[in-house]
Image (spheres, rainbow over the protein chains, first blue to last red):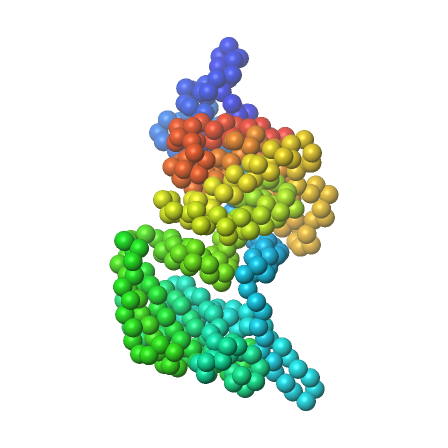
Length: 201
Length: 208
């Protein structure tokens, strides 16, 4: 029994099922996932039951498509951000020398590692990180090779959950960031400044 | 934050290895995601590229997802999503915060997609019909094919109906939110949604 649209007794299309129920409401009931919540009329009406069953059958792929997890390709973010960064940023590198050669690590790598490790600390809602210039007054960023011997200085700005001991949170962030940055880059974070910039309730 | 001003309390000496600077502000009861978005938007407006990266990273899947469902074609969706990410960087200067960042972002993406559709008219079939099925269990392949066919059916809707359907049905927004994004009244949103559903049923009937 096919009841996709209302057809009255004279064979004309209209917006009601033969029992008088609104097609719009019946279809919405299915499309909004309430197809099984049938009222008294619908429990006893063959027209409504047929329409609901047909709409359920037809609509199930839409429901599946809506539930499908869609993730953006990396290129969506990276190429666009590269263009923006290229316009406003300079690249600085840490240089790690070994007998077999030199490893250059972009300042940005340290920034991302610090930001992500800070974000993982419970109580941190959102975090940003940047490299700061050496406290010696040198004009170069601290991460630059030789300025402080494989060392880097980092500033973390974050917003935290309300109600936490923010000084303790700052210490936890500092520990996590130091450990993670050193593990990933072998650069030593000699100075990590934590700025708790806002709290969210 | 009620008045947009933070109360800053400093602890320790900034610049020392143990310094912590604390700024406390009143909360406004908004959802946490909106708070975080607003916090990031403030930083972006001050020129912070990293804040922009974090903000876009939080929303990139949403941007791409809407574009894909609006355009029905991954390549076009990627192009539009990249354009949006670039456009947002400068457009955020004009974001006044009268709506949530998410609503504002949805509006930009939907408008961008509608412009794209207008330019693309009659030029290209939607979605890669000849793309090979992904490897995997038969059920997975069938589900993916069904999802792709559904996407094609949605992409065959007239653009004005499609936007409403994607935002309400696929993104789970309310009538009011869809109205705010598309600049339509709630009753118009309801009417278009119903027409979109009927159109979609007709499309789906052919292969269901």
